[in-house]
Image (cartoon, rainbow, N blue to C red; front, top):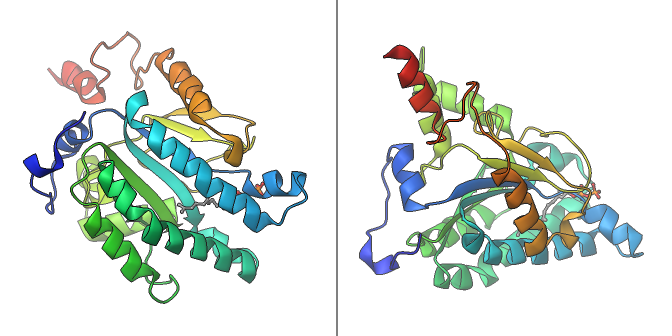
Length: 262
Ligand code: FPP
């Protein structure tokens, strides 16, 4: 969905998630970008070169996503468990993130991409949380694509935080809203993991409850728009039943629930 950024005021309050789906019309794609290290080692390069190539791959996918029907793209850039990596690798990843936030934000804004960082900010190196805030602010009018970067992120911790925020006996709706953050992101439709591993690694555990999973051997730095188109084609060939038995033309889980409670 393309809209002029000047036509719509920035949203800085919580909207119901169905409005977010309209605002960023299209699928919610999540990607576990795995394989940077192996890509570099196969070329006799340091792992840092693999991560730099990973950033280039991310830029290609951000460019291609809107025309392939993606409205929300959530990428796993740094998990809370990644702090266990050697200090020089962590430092390198943080520098890449900072440079992306500083150098690429103007272009993201120009292309109608709104950037949001999910995860903890209190453990980031000095100045990085501020750079995140500035980048989010500069891109807040973007309506073509919502790019969510998971940084110092743990799905389990996010669920614990949301439950604490909601108070006693939260409903599923309360939890989904708390997890959706300021941008009101919707549930994940398709989750891609590159690099051959077949696990979720603590990524979007709640939001991906009914996501279609797509695993590919392709290493992340090699992943391109053709690979993305193939994954999306595969997604469209699947029937999403959300636990039901019949084809549901609306693709809506809440419709199934309403049909049952009527
Ligand atoms: C996993 O590959 C990848 C990561 C832990 C980092 C992913 C980060 C990027 C692609 C850069 C993102 C940057 C921005 C600006 C959002 P791995 O190193 O574990 O690969 P391996 O399994 O082959 O060792």
